Image (tube, rainbow, N blue to C red; front, side, top):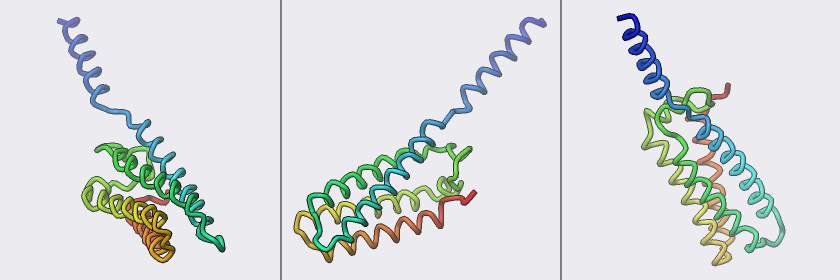
Length: 145
């Protein structure tokens, strides 16, 4: 009887450890992606500060930012709030949160399209909207500690 109880205890303990999913890879990836996105947006900002815009520089930066945002949307699985700076309302307001990523992604696409047309006004407007979206997301979904 005692051996059976030990087996049940071990099976139960193993079951709980399997259920407690480790999201450290996703958390690390999304932190790395946010750092990459921040650096890419800084490079875009620098490119827009030049007297003459280098569209061949702007386009790949905008495309890289777009792809990073698209990947980022996949890195917030349910239950991955622990040990991260993400607020839990990401998961309670998941569609709104993902909508902000969609809007941000769209702005980088618009910058790429404006680069093809060499439309400085449209590109700057899209960059401004991207900045606004970043601020909005940080205010709503990122813990400061």
